[in-house]
Length: 157
Length: 196
Image 1 (tube, rainbow over the protein chains, first blue to last red):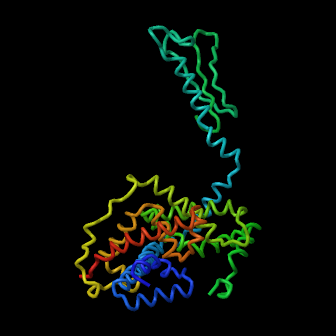
Image 2 (image 1 turned 180 degrees about the vertical axis):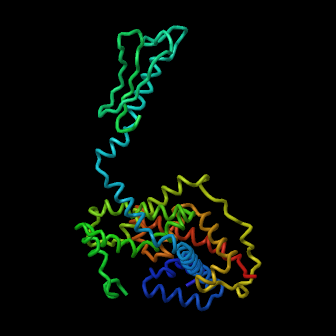
Image 3 (image 1 turned 180 degrees about the horizontal axis):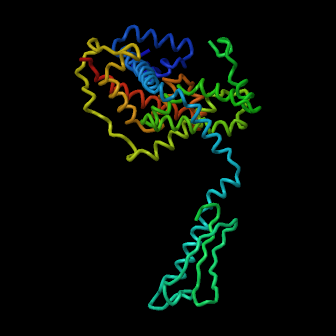
C-alpha cells in the first residue's frame, strides 16, 4: 500500500471502520513510513485533546450543573401551566391598553378641536373602583361635570 | 460496562417510568447525561452559561417529547438530536458573526519539532496549560458549527458515523467530509503547539 492510498484510508483506520484486511495493510504501511505514521499520530491527538478539553470544561462547570434538576423542573412546571392561564397572562394588557386609549380619546385635542367627549375644562374628578369586569366607562352625572370612572380588573390596568 | 451491568436501570426503563409519570425516573436520565450534554453544548455554543441554558432547555423539551421516543433506539442519540438542534439555534442567535476568525497567531507552525512537543495526558494537565486550553477553545470556535458538532460527537462522545448522520439528519458521506475537515483544521492548530 502506498502513501496516497494510506492517507485516503487513514480516518477510517482511526475510527475503526476498515475491514480487517485493509486495516492490516494500513498498519503495515504505517509501520514502515514515518511521515504517514506521524500524520496518523497527529490526527489521533486531535481526538485525545478534544476529550481532555471537554473534560476540563465539564469539570469547571460541575458546581453549576449540580442544581440543574431544580431549573429543569421549573421549566417543566412552567410549560405545564394550563393553556387558559397562559392565554390570560399573555392578554392581560388588553384592558389596560383599552383604558389608555379611551382616556386619550377623551382628553387629546386634535387640530384645535376637542375630542367628542372632551369636557369644557379639565375640572373633572377621576375615581378608582374595583370590579370583576374589564370595562372602561364614562359616566355623566348630569350635573355639568363629567366623571371618568376607571374599572380595574384584578389590580391590573 | 453498560448501565445495567453497573446495577443501574437501562435508559429504556427510565423512559418508561417517566412516561408513566415517575418524575424521579426522568431526573435519573437527566443526571446520567447532563455532563455529557453540557460537554457537547459547550463545544457548539462556546459560552458556558449559554451552554448550560441549552442543556436545561433540551431536557425540558425532552420531557414533553418523550412520548415520541421510539423504544429500540438509543435514548442518547434521540436526546442529542434535540440538544444539538437547540445548541446550534442558540449559537446562531448569540453569535455576532457567523464564524470566528481562525487564530493563525496561535499556530506557530511548521518549524516545531514533533519530538519536542509535550501534550497533556490528563484534564488536570490541560487545565494547567492555559495557552493550549484556550487555544483549543478558539480553534474549536473557529470551525463551522456543523463541523465542530460532528467532531465533538465523534471524538468526545464516540458516536458512530451513522448515529451522527441520524442526529444531524444528513448522509454518512457528509459526516465523513465534515469530520475530515475538522480534524485537519484542529491538527493544524495543534501542530504548532510547543510547551514552554
